[in-house]
Length: 313
Image (cartoon, rainbow, N blue to C red; front, side, top):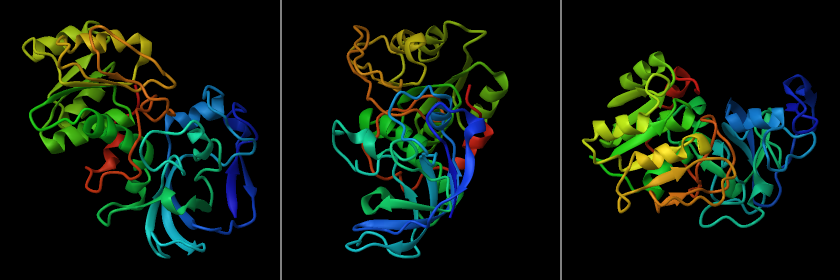
């Protein structure tokens, strides 16, 4: 089969080469997928550049996110069948609950081969069926950024209609978050350094766009917009440079809720926000990735195609 291969993490984009490999064969409870579409996340670029701090195997096939059709199943497989359209779960051996210490060893495109090949070998439990109303291209965008945004907003924050969320930037996680918010009646505030991107975000349903270059105190602008009440949740993708302002955007400690999405930030505490979640997980299109406890993307998400209309800040 054709595949793209990176000799080692940090080798640079010019080191990515097309190679021929033997067609893989599914083992016990494994499935073979003919890959039809892939999507790019910032974590993939970090692996190529050498800025990704989790282990990367030599001669790895890159990309965590991809989708295709099951063409062969191994012994013991019952959850999927030949002909099913599936996407690969980011962590092939983490389907739910708290992650075990070696969860990273099953990360597609890092510790194990990813999706940038004619065929991908997936664990049965690591292949998620794509809903009929989504194309393979749309399904390929869900595993990293889509699940990240969904978990941050719905599993962690448990947002509901009428709540207000602050989304940083216009990368994949934030744009997915904006679409989820718009579909569920959640008021969204979006920050960006680009007025053009903010215009696009408003077209997707943002209630307010704040240019953090021309309005450095964007946290205060969010407070003013909410009449001093603050937002109900912040999806934090900026890290140390923005975390303090993110907590200021919700001044009430009893209501504070920030999902810290900074790569490898393992212990964050803030007096202004006692509810700060910072899972240790890989990067995504929005530059960072929040916690992922669900093994499958939401079945009825807004169109992922909007990600292509707003590039990462």
